[in-house]
Length: 380
Image 1: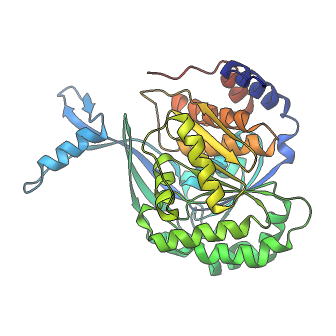
Image 2: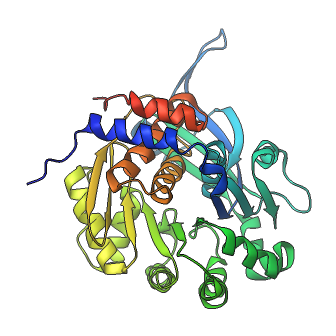
Image 3: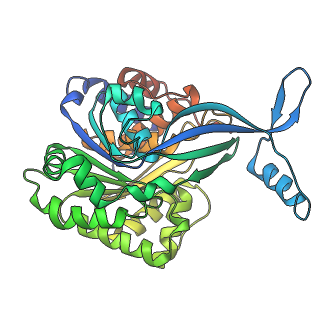
């Protein structure tokens, strides 16, 4: 029986392969879309001091207690904006890929007719095609998670008509034809994404020539959508698999929501072995190429031929958590299109996320390879 490589051996091989890919990466094209948000990262004040210092509310549970105590009364909470930045699952993932040296084109609602200031730096390292105004997210961050409060009116403008008119039908076909990696993310918050998917799977993807591309999909917390809508989206993923190799990326909550719709057992903890089994169950039920699940402490994935799991370099007090999952997605997809093993791809994913939450910025390829080589052990 073959002995599975150790965590150290996986990190060493992943780091080596990432470093070796430096010359190859600029030749790989990624086409990502279709959302766009301006994010404000916010701390909620618990105690304010006269010298200007404040103590933040540290956990979601503590925030919930405050809100519960205000029922039948009233309450006033001070919010401190600690950072303003580009947001949305697509822009964060695409920006991370661009920092890793891929040739990235992004289509989404980043400001129309003029690009919003929050995306100017992103536009300097990737080609950007904007078709509508961005949404806005107030991200209340705590030590144990975040609460995302969104303003979504402009997301209705991300529709098939605007996509074809403002990006161009022929240009879209050219971009998909040239892409190695395609990312379609944030289905949940884009109410017209279904019509775009219908067009792609019916008219665009069947006309793609050459080898099979990789399509990454992140549904992005489908709790606000009906089970019927979610079931229809999953059926479209099965149709996409006929033309491209589909990777469905999920956090633990999303995996449970999809399990409920499919009528299969879910789970409530991040035990790595159980995650791998759940990923395999969901992949088989949806009939896509790969399902990957990435809670905070570990990640697991399944293809038709194998399952794998890898513990993350979990940190209790990250500098930033909003966008951590999108950075995992960037690193994991990078591993997949480079031909890394499933375990190595998970290692690349958790490391890209781990670097980001520690530094509050996306790593370069050299920084990622170095971080992987000395990957911190999981905390606590």
